[in-house]
View 1 (cartoon, rainbow, N blue to C red):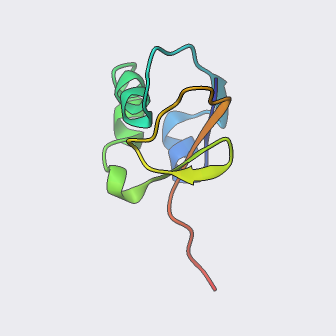
View 2 (cartoon, rainbow, N blue to C red; view 1 turned 45 degrees about the vertical axis):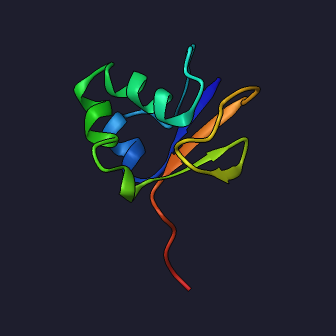
Amino acid sequence: MDVLYFAWVRERIGLPKERVETSATTVMELVEELRNREERYQAAFADLTALRVAIDQDLADFDAPLAGAREVAFFPPMTGG
């Protein structure tokens, strides 16, 4: 699946997008797999309360299933008016 990173998440990881082979069944399991890769992922996913996630461009929770997902995106909450 494609994993996309936006804003400061992209800055900490150093990539805007990557293709990930995963056995994760939920977003949280994917986050754990990514955290275990390297320190830059640990830094990006240190505070999940500061992150939002979308599966195939629909907002989701971290306990959402990944079955059939083609894309997961991580980004900070949007602000503005």
